[in-house]
Length: 580
Image (tube, rainbow, N blue to C red; front, side, top):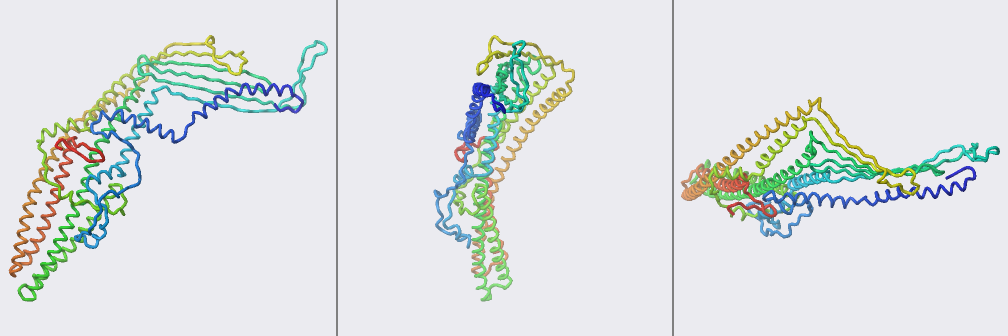
């Protein structure tokens, strides 16, 4: 204590009391400091909770990735892939750029897309956030602890008071001095609380509080109390069903999100395969256009020689020279389309545009027609049993029915059982810390009743829940019909692609014979320019159609298995079906 006069004995006593009463506040402050953790710790804690929730529900979702993680490295390493040693002639000047490029097989492309694809990473993070949300909801239904504390030091000046002995009575009497004295005080408080919503029991809340206000020249003693409160709904919201529904729905939502992610994995693999074969198809179109250009140049050169001898007309020569120019233009456009589709594919894989790579032509050469050996009706039954999105719709109908029951329950009157117990400290305790004593207690118990004279909001919620249930039921029916339509359409697409391939095979053979025939007639000087041009163009078109039909059938088959829900994704994006 600071005083303008000589009050040394009082200042010494104040120091002793200050040390004694600051001990509880110091302990509380130390506890708060020790409770603080680093950001790195919290990140690891969040990962542990989210991944635990995902691992817990993964066995309930067939084909879910058992090693799910959102950890990703930005480094793309292509050194392990084969290197192209030759420059393809059919790419012209662009072919030299592919010398030294890394060659990707389909399985390599799938692995890169899974490891580095930006869209794929976004979906993984979306699932992770759903699991993290469930972890928080679960945490809210465990004992929740909180702590807080405060402390202040303040002072003000007052007139000094001293005590003198009355000469008549001999008693001490206060005498106010004109001197001002600085009066200082320390106050503090701390609280520890816990709240626990126990499933089908009720909510239990406890708290421990301690406070003290100490004037350094003497003053109040510290005090504390321990309180416990229990609430249990008996009629409306009995067992806290409304609050427990949040946990139930969060648990089910993560299951839905796991199914959605698993289905996305399948869709993603089909998309990557579609783009991969699309690039190879464009590359094959460049090759066919280049062959057409070579053939057109050869035909034009032969016709020039024959025209110089007077064996072909200038009109025929002009027609064939025009064909040569058209073939060159088509070849240039095919190269541009191929390079553009390759760049787009790089983006899909999560690579930079400057990455020098080329896809493996052997993947296209290895394709062949594999037609499913299952009829349409059986396919529909398989899809209705195995489609994860359809399972979600069915389960969401159950959610809607459960919400109807919950909102119906909220129309009832509210009757809650409430009880509380409080333990207090001894107000005459002169020790450094006043603890609550069992013999100093108070308690109460009773019923909290709300007859529900106004239930307009609850009425509207109940009616809305009924409508939502009916919508969910219609959604299940709608999705079942959409699945039937998808399966039928997929089957038709497969059959069409198969027939297109068979037709294009015949078309290629016919076009090749026509070109051979026109070449023989040209050597004899009997060929017509228009017939030569038509034959060569038809050959290029037939070859392109054959490649497109083969790729279309392959993609249609993958999509068909996916629509049935039986396209299982293996490690790093590769797939297998029941027939493999």
